[in-house]
Image (cartoon, rainbow, N blue to C red; front, side, top):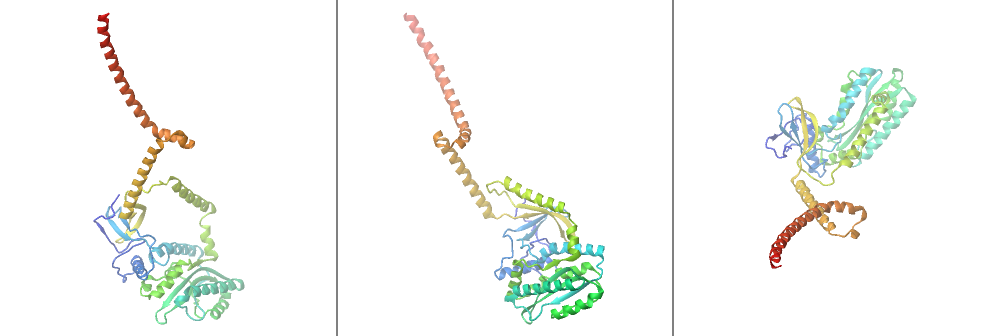
Amino acid sequence: MIAAGAENRHQFSLLPEGFMLSSVVVDQPNPYRQAAALAQRLEAIGINPYQSDKQRYLVALQDSPGEIIELGRPLRGTRFFASHAVRKNRPVVEDFEDFAAQDGLQDCLYWGVGLTGAKAEAGDLSDALKRFNDRINIEFSELRKRFAFELLLLAVHPRFDPVSGLFDLHAHFVARVLPEDREAVRRRLMTKFSKVDLPDSPIRRAAAVATYMLWGIFRNRVMITWPDHALQAVWGLTQSRFRFVRSGGAFAKWKASRRSPEEKAARASDKARRVRNRKETAYPLQVITGDRLLSKVMVKIRGVSIAALLFEATKKQDVEAARISHSAAESMYSSATVSVTQESRDQVGGSSYSKVRRAAAPFWNGLRTQLSRFGNVIRSWGTKIGSFARAPLRRLL
């Protein structure tokens, strides 16, 4: 196993999840650097953004085999951080692009609506976002009932206004609206929402639209400059599991149809079997022999995709604690074996007596062998002494 303190470790600008630098350059549009800088801001105001306090690192298998790349502590798996948003957003963009290639997004429009009334304060952000989401659900349900309106994809953006110190809540969505109902739908949205963006131009690039919708939810490069109370308010939204992205209509059905029910059941069964197997074969004692290998991954370093091994570094105190617990367990079990073998059969439960006998058998077999050898020596000397005493007795007689 490769040691955690190897001398040839160094850092790169583009790294996978949990990347952390002591000095972060936020000017470059790098999602991992931006997430690292944002995590440092959160930690400075008393928020723990990490899912573990153990450091992680990569060991390159290609290009420069054996090269060790520090990653730092892994961040919590939330869309809040751009490094995790990459994995969450990319499949949605690819699915929407494939769906558009098959369907063509005929009669589909890219629109936007804003929060009715005043902007939201940081302390009221969660409730304001819930009210905004309820308003969207109510109005879009009415549009589906009254007109030919079909929502395909929606994303909610919480944006902080540094001038007013308030949050501006708005949503971007892609919907299919028939030309004959388009004007009526537009008028209703204009009366129900204070800010609207309702262009009549068709969607030319589905991937570009989906990318802007998803990446506009949490813009790490801008959020780094937000004041502490704004960051705390938005971080609270991520802990409440609010759904910032929703899909519906034909797009949701198309995604669900890409995987058959039999395949879903098989994947769930395989996962349950793996979890059960880990529990049944787990070793009860904690034995740490080195850093933990997590997985084999593909990463892009210096613009080249290479294979690498992802490790989790083991802390020194964890290794020492494991050794102490292991030594204590060994001494406990050996002492228990000695004391149990000295007990009588009446003092040992019937269910465990056979085990005690098997444990004590080597000791008694060894003792029996030594006594047998000592007895043979005594009998041999007795035979020699007897023959020596019988000779003068025959001469006397």
